[in-house]
Image (cartoon, rainbow, N blue to C red; front, top):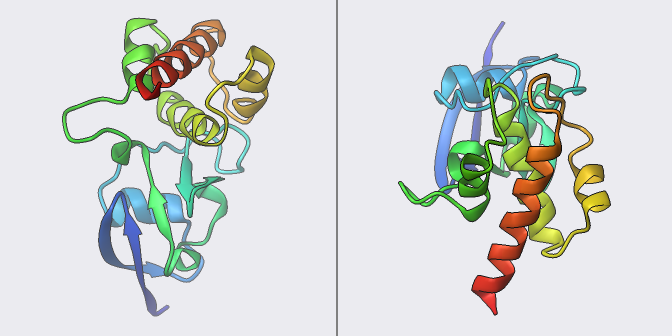
Length: 160
């Protein structure tokens, strides 16, 4: 089977990679670009571990064929921080112990980032709804929700 060249922007950098026509974007990001922050939890779009932003929209990379990324702008968990400076959301996850094993954490961070970009003052219900596509088997979700609420408050305060 011939390989297809894909050109897109990933985490602010222009990239080119080769992939199979039926290969998932998840596998291309991990195997071709070395972005191992996104995880494969289910392969069916049910767990959110492979969440990415594609053209600023939240998507499960396991459900996207890699060639569909041509011409798009993708942000993975690796692209959230500014170098060594974590985002307020990442800091709140650390400070609030909103992570344990780490498999789901990248997906939660990307999904929460998408939420806060569109809604800087979400209610608890809105946070839970926005994160409903992400599954965690360790934390029980409360610490994650509190971390997102705290990050939203810090971000609003910083922009005031």
